[in-house]
Amino acid sequence: MPRNDKMEKVKAKKHLGQHFLTDENIAKKIADTLQLDGYEIVLEIGPGMGVLTKYLLEKNIETYVIEIDTESVEYLNAHYPKLHGKIISKDFLKYNLNEIFLGKPFALIGNYPYNISSQIVFKCLEMRNQIPEFSGMFQKEVAERICEKKGSKIYGILSVLAQAFYEVEYLFTVHENVFNPPPKVKSGVMRMKRKENFQLPCNEKLFFTVVKTAFNQRRKTLRNSLKSLIISDNLKEDSIFALRPEQLSVEQFIELTQKIEANAV
Image (cartoon, rainbow, N blue to C red; front, side, top):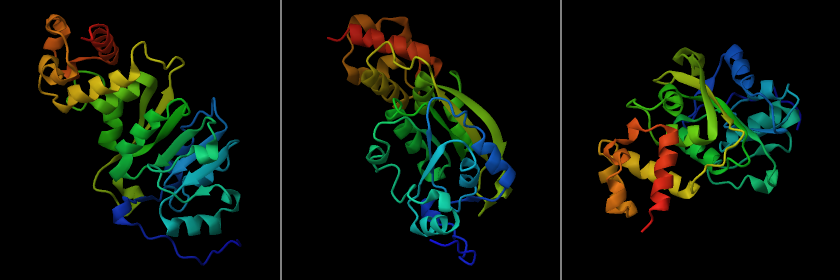
C-alpha cells in the first residue's frame, strides 16, 4: 500500500482506553528499555499510530504489532511499509499468539491500555515460558504495584506472581501532558526480565491459587483466608498462618505452598 500522508490521524477511542503518546523522546526511551537478550521477536501491544513502533523498527529485531482498533491498523499499514504482514488485527487477550509465533520466544512491549493492563500482565505470566522480557508503560499505580515489596498496602497478587518469575524494575514516571487525550493519572514505565531459573520449587498451579485466595481477603490472617484449601488443623498451627498476605515475601509464599502441598489431607 502506498504511503498516504493525507490520511487523517486516528482519533483516540475511550472504550479502548486509548491515550496516544505524543512525546518522541519518551517513546524512544520506552523502546530502549528492551535489552534484546534471548529472543529475536518483539510484539508491541496497542501501537496506535506507531509512535513507539518506529523506534522498535530501527532495532535489530523482528517487530510485530497487535492492534484491536481497525482504524489504527489502516493507519499503520499506510505509514509503516516495514510492518506489512506483521500487523495482527486481533484482541491480544483472546488471540492465540502461537498461530504466528509457533512457540518461539518473544518480548512484549507497549503503551498499554489502562483498562486492561493487569490482564495483559496475567497473560504474560501464563505465557512465561515464551516471554523472556516484558516492558512498557502502565498507569503509575499499576507499575508501582507490580514492583512493590512486602509490607505495603499496594503489595498484592500482581506483585507476588510477577516477582516469582521475573526480576521487576520501575524505571521512570511519565506525566499526563505528553498524551492526547491526557489521562487523569500519571504513568509509569517498568521492565520485567525473566529469572534464569523461573521454575518454582513447588506446584505452580497451587502457588497461583494460594496467592490469589490469600489476597482476595487481604485483611484476614492466612488461617482464615485459606480455609477453602482444606488445610489440616496441625498445619494451621504453623506461625505463618497468623500472618496477613501482605506480610509475606515471594519466598515465603513459595514456602507456604510447599507446606500446603506436603500436608494435603
